[in-house]
Picture 1 (cartoon, rainbow, N blue to C red):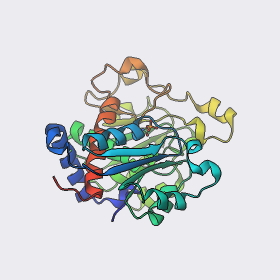
Picture 2: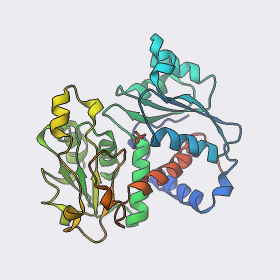
Picture 3: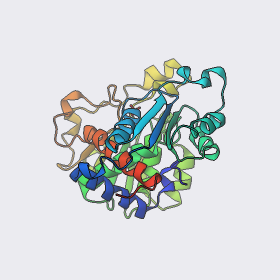
Picture 4: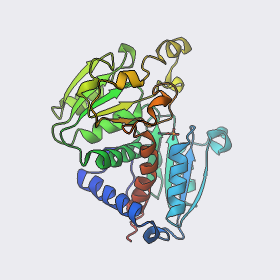
Length: 305
Ligand code: CP
């Protein structure tokens, strides 16, 4: 029995297999429509979500399965003090697979160590978000045809941005990847990721403070939200929240085939005027996330179609 806690739990061969399955689901949805008949997904969301929870639920329904779960900690027995370990043991009696989001880093790992069914990390605090990365990887694969030789700009909250951390881990395994890290000083990429991932794999990277100085170099610009919920101090959040706002003017120096990505939700980071630009990929990410989650559920439940 396997869980998905970090994107590194999947090797590059398995990532390619998931991409192939997701593409096949896109082309032949009926083939998969009863694949998980009789199976149940439990969505245990201790933190707010629109895309991740609902795309997991849509994914399971489109595979012919069922869904149980809760969407806030307050409506579960966590509000009465139940531990993550006991919750995982309990849900193992009701469901076949768990998708868990939790504000505490490591909570889905604890759940996986106590559950008797696969656990998928649907985002843990400021740590990891591997299924967002699966959505991102399918988007990049469909837009760019592969993962080698890309210059990837990552912009915004690189400190607490779990989607950024997982994406860096995933892309660092491909050839000739370069990262451009665009953030204010206070929200720089944590040094453990620079040391354990970028330096370990000899990945070229640079840190800058404006989009304008690097926009022309980028194949991908991955924007992120400054996350109010991760700040201890409201003043710091208010000072930093609008540091980066991508506008059509700022895109004027970009490559014609740049892909603008964002895990969403967006607050102010990307002007809505960019939504109609063919380089905007963020709503494709939303759609592709559902197909990658379908492929992942099939893999972890060991269902063959
Ligand atoms: N990208 C993402 O995780 O969105 P939600 O918080 O809405 O799930």
